[in-house]
Amino acid sequence: MDPVIIVVGIAVVVALIIGAIVAFRKKPAPQIEVPPEPQRLAPPKAKEPPPPVKVPAAEPGAAKAAPPPAPPTTKKPELEKPKAEPPKPPTTKVAEAAPEAKVEAPPTKVADVERPKAAPTPVVARDSAPAKRKDIEGLRKGLTKVREKEGFFGRLKALFSGKREIDPGIVEQIEEVLLTSDVGVATTQKLLAEIKDRLAKNELTDEARVWDLLRERATELLAIGGGGIALTTKPTVVMVVGVNGVGKTTTIGKLATKLKGEGKKVVLAAGDTFRAAAVQQLNVWGKRIGCEVVSGKDGANPGAVIFDAIQRAKDVGADVVLADTAGRLHTKANLMEELKKASRTMAKAFDGAPHETLLVLDATNGQNAMQQAAMFKEALPLSGIVLTKLDGTAKGGVILGICAEQQLPVRYVGIGERAEDLREFNAEEFVEAMLGSGGQEAS
Image 1: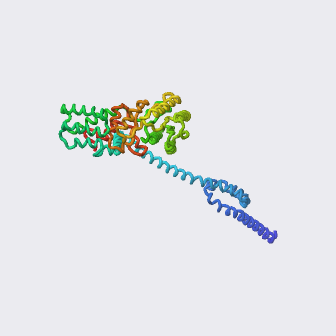
Image 2: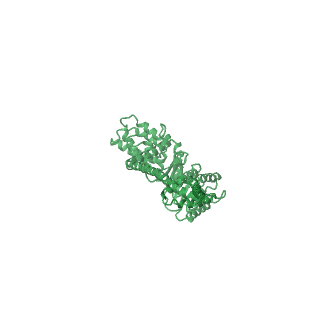
Image 3: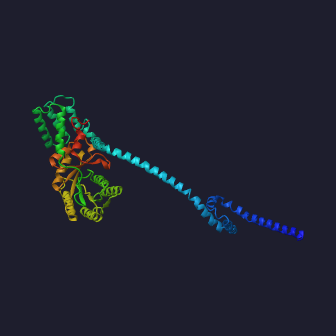
């Protein structure tokens, strides 16, 4: 053959080879461009080493589809998911670890709380004594005037203090103190008779024994009942009576506050229709403590107002009805008769009403308070007494006389202006507040 033709053929073959090489080199170029993006996806490629040739075939299509934003976005989240998943588990684990630490901390605290609970059992008993002591201290503060040097028990204490032996002639001095402190003649005679008898038997040889005797007898006279009102039915109707100015309306407000604090539902009856200020005062108490007040027009029939209040209490499911009444002079028979009518009206509204009839007495009235108790007891079936303003008198002996002569239990005593100063009466605590306990006289 002609050498020229051979050379030309070789050149053509070489050109074809070179073109093929160039063509193959140009095709992987996009492969190199594509991998930089998936370099982040190196792990997935490493997992698929066998099909390297198929990948480029798919890649050109991918490269062509790469320009549109939709396909790459779909591929990228798929590729990012594996990467996002590995970091998420550690974060969740850390979050779980944190709560575990928090959960572990409280149990230790709970254990700490439970440990003291076992130990405090004896402490609870100790705490109850201080609580009672606080009540007695509060009573002593309210009875300061009675316990002062010029007060009832202060004067008694002055008779015995500093004396090693008790002279029988001291009986006359004791009698003077008792009578001038509104204890009453009958009660004074009972106490003096026993003192004389003990002195004759040489049983009262020192001051401590005299105080012990006074404590015993005072507790016996006062412990004929007492405590708060008894809620025997629903609603329990409580009628509050007394003369003008003794503090009936204020006592009702304080008593309602106390009952409301105990979770009782209370309805107030403004039965004092002759004094407009009484209705207004009761409305103020009702708004303050959240109690419904049933009232009528000025001068309305008090029995009708109380009747409506009882019906209202039954409708709303109240626990207690506290019925205020107009102040009545115990010396006026016609006024006392009106109280009897009101009491009968209550019985028509609810069987057995009034379930409690409380007489409010002003401790500062002295012997006059004892006369009031006697007159009201004749007119109404009194169930107890509320003795107010004990903090304002030095003659506290009236409480002994009323209990001894009228046999009426003291339910509450008022020793201040605050609602909590109306206290349920307890004979032992009251005597201890004035005379001390054991061999320790009141100081």
